Amino acid sequence: MNPADTAWIMTATALVLLMTLPGLALFYGGLVRSRNVLSVFMHCYAIACLMSVLWFLAGYSIAFGPGTSGIWGGLAKIGLTGVTADSLTGTLPEILFFAFQMTFAIITPALIVGAYVERISFGFIVLFSGLWMLMCYAPVVHWIWGGGMLADGGIFGDTGVKDFAGGIVVHETAGLAAIVLAVMLGARKHQTTPPHNPGLVMIGAALLWVGWFGFNGGSQLAADGGAAMAITVTHISAATASLTWALWERIKFGKSSLVGIVTGTIAGLASITPASGFVGPWAALLIGAVAGILCQEAVVLMRNRLKVDDTLDVFAVHGVGGIFGTIMIAALGAGSWTAQLGSLAIVGVYTVVVTVVLVLVCRAILPMRVDLETEVNGLDLSVHGERAYDITS
Image 1 (cartoon, rainbow, N blue to C red):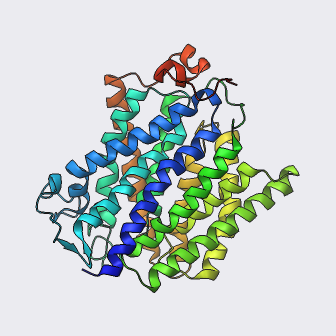
Image 2 (tube, one colour):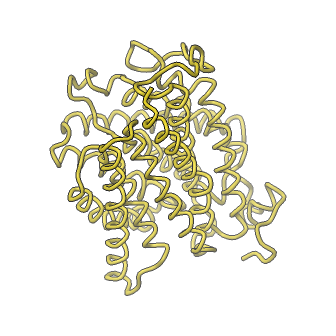
Image 3 (cartoon, rainbow, N blue to C red):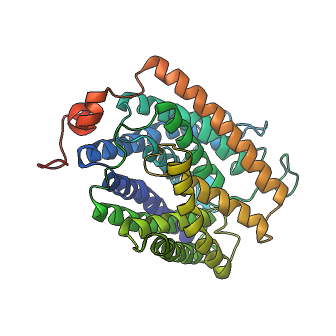
């Protein structure tokens, strides 16, 4: 065990949890109507709790167990069987590696929350999120980070897919699941209400930005120059994408908005995530510059042309950003085109199929959507019996 590595990953674990609680909750909560803000907080909080328990019971074993098929890790480490305070993963205590990866298992299904807010049944989403993490997210983790079929020595030979911190594992899977849920759920009845609290959106984005240092820098699994570089390129990409999003918004509409610039931040963070361990500062500048415009145009495509009510643009920002960053690894010569594109295709098809099946199964058990009266009046009071503010909009 290396004490410096251990101390850094303990810190990174806290930073990644900060991304969901409270970062993502505030970011998403500020974007919805005031009568739905508590429902968003509830979704994020409940998912964080449930994923933590499920990751302990089976998720970690499926993702990082000693499976030999390349498809899943098996159940040898179910309930952390055989994992003690003295067990090591590289230079880290394995129990710390478990905790660090648990925070990724929390934020990935939490990202999907943005696709279905303001109209979905709470019971449905609890059931769906738990099954999705175990049956979609955890196997994909094994394929790429757990030595499975897409890693080095897998189906792409010695040059496996390069996904440093989750462009495919986190952002592609969450983004595609978001599209499936949005389509199968149907659009909101009222889609024109502006964000009720842009200030909360900015605070949430700022917390996400800080937490992302643990997300990407921690993925080095060591306190070394590689972690420092990952943090640096993460910051450069985020800052650049924020500026290009704001500039592009001003060119098109004559104004740069607060919600716009912070959404650009998230686009830059998502786009650099898969490449953060393989590229330098100039490449990060390029990735961020393109991401701010690319993801903004993806929002326009999804909303105005395809008419998909992915409420808070999960696919356009996270999905497109993660896919773009994964492709840029090959474009910049840091990975194989075959492995990068092939892995995107395999994981993409798998995610869509599993998500569709799980939606069909879960809605046969529980109602998927709230009734019209609940949707119009807001989920906070109708579903959770609470109200965020004295005056609702």
